[in-house]
Image (cartoon, rainbow, N blue to C red; front, side, top):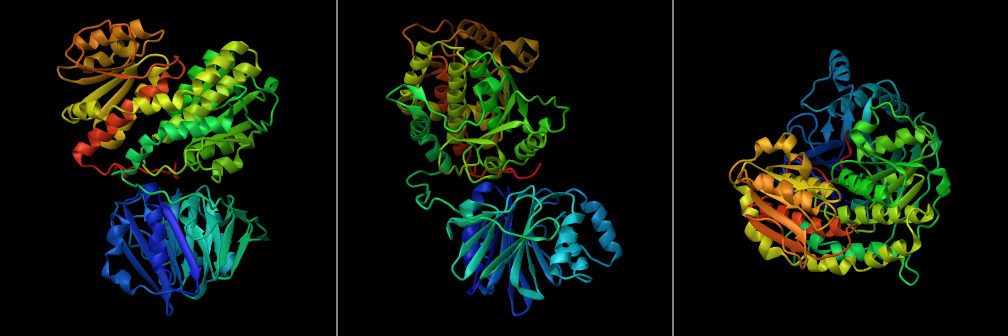
Length: 606
């Protein structure tokens, strides 16, 4: 969600900025732009749409300069068009911005009285004019400190100045920002993934800090404008370039990579020889934890819901789940014996980070389940459990979801064992069964022909439903979310037993209803609920696991069977056909599967 790149060099930077913006495309955006300094002038090129459109702009070919900033924008204030695209500039200042300025209306009124004229509908433009105004009376460092103190909300900023042509200023509050180091040039970026193409030496700004970047020097300052020292981190340089290969979309590749994802996660956390789970350096005694709260957004929230069922099944802990965007606005009763687990693929989800920050300020125990170990959430949590999925480029999460629920299941098993709430033989058996999961997922992926034939039905109706009970309920929610994200059709997930309490009114002839009914403890009840929707004209797609027993129902439209395993692990397998259903539904519509409209991969605004 929005991306920043800045480069100060001894050579022309526009081509490098464009290449870095392409690396940031996966975050989700609707316009792009670049500004450079050349011969005492700020030059801008901006466009609505993709970076490819910006690249085709004739003016870009003439854009010179050894210092520049670039941006991909996900609209918050103002329509997605070239006027509202970043950078925004006055006669002597140009700014790119991730985040939201909450007092922009008040600041705009103040600046208008000072004679400033606004061209866009954005909140970002107030930053441009505020810095311009403050530079009239103060030198650079004081003007920047004063400006940042006047801004309310969240931001990551990249700023260049016509009259100070050898530097870029970066500043952070809430939104992530990093500095990269190279030979005869230095970089500013919202994302280490974009910077990795140029360097593996990175420093992350903490909240309230700003930096001054020159081609041969980087200075850091705290929120009071006092110079500080920062560590340089060396990122892993052995990651291969992540490309689509023979796949049409990153999402298709990421769905097929899930057996490898799960195998990698198992390898990292499980000792096969001893059938033992190893979670090293856990910072608390197990007796110090009596309750767990799991917090996430979107797909990560569904991971939390899934974990709640496992923790309740395998432990006697008090388990709560919370949507991150609601958590920090409630009156939470923080207790010393609580563990707060924050789940986020990117580790930069703004709502989740804000919830973590609230817990930190109340001295709570915090754990992060993330895919990006250099992320803000990972750096600020007391303890980190990486999901080891590798890059996930598709906006609609697939392999990261399975990675999240794998780690949460492993954690719940370990807690149950350490607390002596499951017996040793059961624990060992469940760990051994986990070792078979990658091959079961691989076999469950072989359903493309069946799913392709079914998928068009979901595009031809005004809505659909996804039903499940118990372990299958969070998976039903995730399946509905995937269809909404990719095919732009209305889809709702419900507990199957809730249909008669209202949602049944929506059922009409021909409506597709996905029923997740593995042969578990809920099977017979779920089949009864399924028959209720069939009786009212629904076309039921039943997803269950393979069994010698016949399905105890009639008039089912289509059936898909995944592989068989224990009840704990069936949610992993049930997820696969739902991911493929969403993918093929969107594919038949010709939609941009890796970059669905209005959505972003890394949600860095509240």
